[in-house]
Length: 378
Image (cartoon, rainbow, N blue to C red; front, side, top):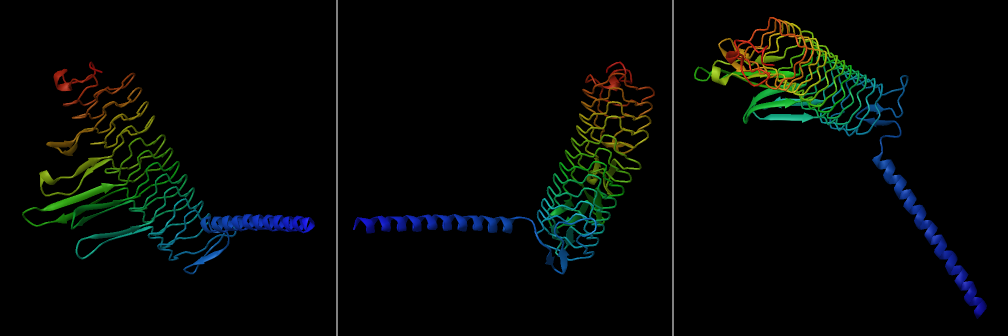
């Protein structure tokens, strides 16, 4: 009897051990399955006729020009070297996707339409934290696309649409790309639509009215970026790093069309606390720009027009240089009419030939009360 009992105990122990092993194996298999389901594509997959190549190389990559990938979930997928020129990616989830060296020229990542009832229907891709390093987004539609913290180092965004404005049933309605915190080092935004204005004639009683808006690039890194021929008037670039950026023929301030002065919409680029150390802005029209707290150490602003933005007899948006770092800057022959330099840091700054008119001086006084100049009140 005792012998039978010992045999039974050994059998029971063996069964329990096997049950534990089976349970562990099932758990491991379940974890592997869950991980596979949540991880990026690990094998070539066909989506709407487009074969997404896994582990792409310069010789073997996704080649789907003009593909319809609207609304598709591509989050985390590696699409390096892909040819998606002219593709429809409207409403796609591109979060953390990789597009290194890919061609997305003329691609649509957003579609915004003014409906007959004057409501705006907009569907845009989400591309936060996506990697577009050295990718081509030339002439791509990026209005309303979320590109926060995206990697766009060396990317080509020339002629891309980053802002779009409408008159809707709810009034002004602008759909703007969000590039806050994005890395645009050495990227090209030449000719990109970074600010937009739309005008509408409401008839004799009201006349022409404009609605304007600009893309958001606050805290973005634009070191060595090309911003030639861009309109930055309504663009948000607060705390952006613009060291060694190029601004050839860029527009820094404008007013939308309006029939009445009280309806005039004017804005200068928001460069508050931006890094513009050593920037060459000589001869530029910088009317109404917000340089508050900006780093302009060693910048060249000679012959620049920093007077207020607006009509000649109606200065509407004064240029703001308050708290800016102007040490070693060259402002020779600059126009500082109605500008504010309150609290600005000066030292070895060249103010020779500056035009002072109702200018707020660095010490808090005004040029009008200081003999028509601020040179003795720095």
